[in-house]
Length: 323
Image 1: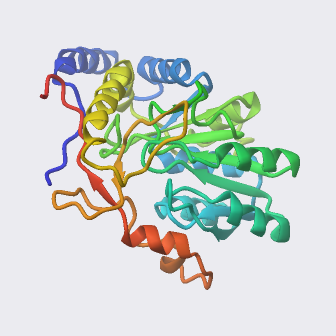
Image 2: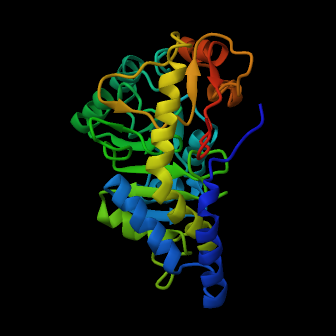
């Protein structure tokens, strides 16, 4: 299947207008559109937002803020390698946790068994495929009771919610990706969301080398004004995109009964439409190779191995006016 970026062509005049403003301003980074994008994303997610040039930059900033070097961080094996890689980049130790077959996300049962024994310092909860992890509440409650830092990988979950609660609102921070394949995209980009004001201020310094007092030892993770402008325009379209995908998914549901089925009150952003039967015209799998195998961790994660072989993704691309 051919990949399609879900950009609404009706917004092209807005992009051209924004780019003209950026060019004439001679301020191509750290300007008006960066702040506008952050403001719009904050309003959508009801959390303070800091824009970055990548998901990785947002995640590394938080890991540095919470000083996890040398500490143990739990991570699902069924995720993109970016998640364990940023943990290792921060000098922390990764320990993999199994997923559920029902939602492809972290299993509370396996998490609790390992957490009771290993006493992790932090856990990376990954929301796979556009929906929220079904065990989010239980994992968040356990973390709160046991003083474990909870971070949310929200790379897939644009527009998702559960009884009105948004991704990133359970943990200390959440991280969105705006890579080219995502539900809304800036080509490359990321956003950190958090209710922690000190983290937000740290992240703004971290993405810019710690300027100007250099107390924060950051690097360059600034988003360009061009990417931020696209992000602001795309954020205005998010509801249209999510409504379109949910309406399209409702039609697919009559055809695919053996699929991921959401609990009451959950709205998926449908980054992926996941089924458990082979599909001829599939866009492939969310993740076919599990992170614990890539990193050669000797750990038995049967559900992760099962889902890697037994799920497929039905195409569900946004297109304005598409029948």
